[in-house]
Length: 134
Picture 1 (cartoon, one colour):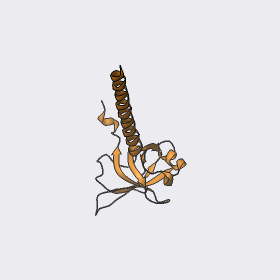
Picture 2 (cartoon, rainbow, N blue to C red):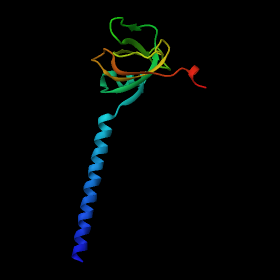
Picture 3 (cartoon, rainbow, N blue to C red):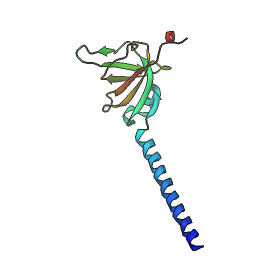
Picture 4 (cartoon, one colour):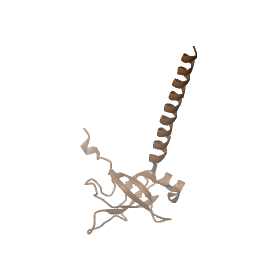
């Protein structure tokens, strides 16, 4: 009888340790990789400087679009889809997708690069135009 009781205690302790370990992994994984997904007006309302990392959605404006001829990358104004007067300057260093153009809907992921100086993106994705869908 005492042996069964001690075996139960061992199983309960092992299960508790396993559950605590899994919970710790979930919490650390979620907090480490969490990124806000915001449109431009939400990011501006929250304060672009208050964001650590973010994924922003908007439309590329024709004004402020500068592609460097010397290096790979682009600087552009990302406008809110519903309020186009609200913009954030985005700098991206990397290969620019072929579908990137003024008026294209894009998602950028990155972080602010200093107070009131815009957004530095490490990922740039364009939404596929409707002409590709069937």
